Image (cartoon, helix red, strand yellow):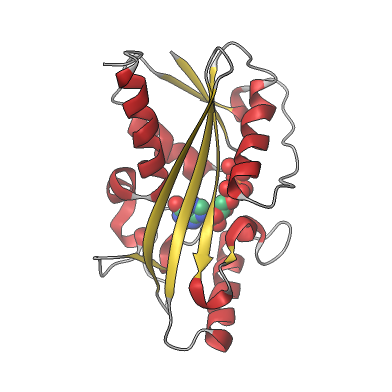
Amino acid sequence: MEIWIATGNKGKLEEYKLTLAKFLEIKVYSQSDLPVFSAKPETGTTFLENARIKAKSVKALKADYWVLGEDSGLEVESLNHLPGVHSARYAGPNARDSENVAKLLKMMQIRSGANRQAVFKCMTVVYTPQNEELIFEGVLKGTISPKLAGVMGFGYDPVFVPEGETKTLAELGPAWKIQKSHRALALSQFLAKLKETTVIS
Ligand code: ITT
């Protein structure tokens, strides 16, 4: 099977490719493999709405294939669950990961006190070749470290310490993330469904 991942985020794509590499029957492509593609604005107010916008924009060009779109983000308890759907743009429309992380740490210094609880959420929408919609969700609980640590991964990985761990995701690295992250948890549900329907073995 061919699956098209509707993302322009290289960090996300790398994690999908790493996980799917062991399934020799799955070929992975992304929107950057399309000759012409322009991403639609993420106008949804929920992860699900934005995941649908992304998946549908690639499905419109790859109607007969499997297409996966995903919207994810960080919800910090003491910041009223922000940055949430704004995670990629928290410090501004074209903000770099380092700027988003710096804003997060600053906001938490002002507002969070001792409460550093946070969750990563990943909402995944898959369209089958027959255009059936499948929805999967993954959640990863943890805390926000006051200081950056680690160089692997992307986004908020250098400040997110998963529950039960003492290191950040950027220190734990891709081997940990592809087993246990919010993205991995959503993807494993999709893979279970593919196995159930014998698309893969
Ligand atoms: P696409 O929409 O093209 O997939 P994006 O980066 O804009 O790429 P999102 O809108 O889903 O993706 O925003 C997700 C943001 O949430 C992402 O840019 C990171 O800042 C953060 N994020 C999501 N998953 C993460 C992870 O596993 N590690 C670190 N940060 C993550």
